[in-house]
Length: 124
Image (tube, rainbow, N blue to C red; front, side, top):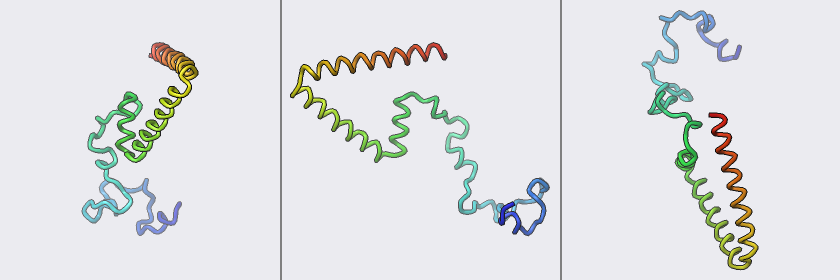
């Protein structure tokens, strides 16, 4: 038992409450007390129709993440632009090495995509 439960004016436990008995938190006309959420705010505007995050595609997940934290999205876009500029500089200074490394990267991406497609077909 917590101190909060022991200091209630009603000595009965929550399990012994009668359904017709009003909740002390709702006695003021249903106004939410600080720190509590209403059921509509907890479920959002969509209610039960909102898709689960796991059901979204990768571009949709990126969009949701960018909307939830736009600063992080801007930082990631800046880092990608910075990395791409180094990739271009690598091609300008060492074209043969950059071509070889790009070919290796393309093969690795193809292997990862193949594993993804095979695992998707096996699991689904």
